[in-house]
Image (cartoon, rainbow, N blue to C red; front, side, top):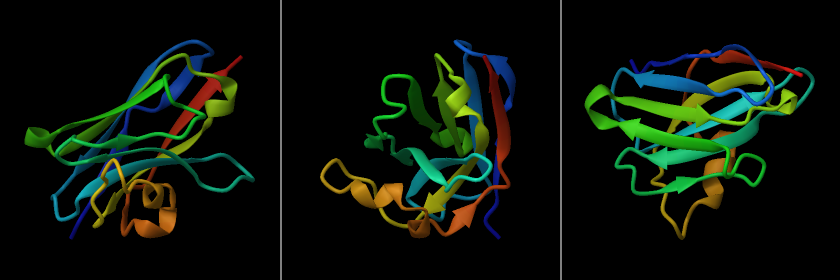
Length: 128
């Protein structure tokens, strides 16, 4: 059974940084994505990466502030979040997808329906 476990969330102030971790019990999928969901809002794509780390993808809302990376030896993907804003407050989820993220094929990674495996989420709260 595939398990994804997020950690690293917490309460920080605007401008601070956090690093989230997503530990996978197995690597039966090819790409990992991070999503977030704030109360009353739809789930929003944050970042995606292939296990090989060869491709990454970000929406404009976090580009330049968030960095996704992976440690293949630990089956763990990280989300480094810098210059946090109150609007970044949400529950953050990591998810696994069978599709491979490529530079010329990345749009699919923004759709949460493309991901088959999900973690339980970790809360990030950014105070102003």
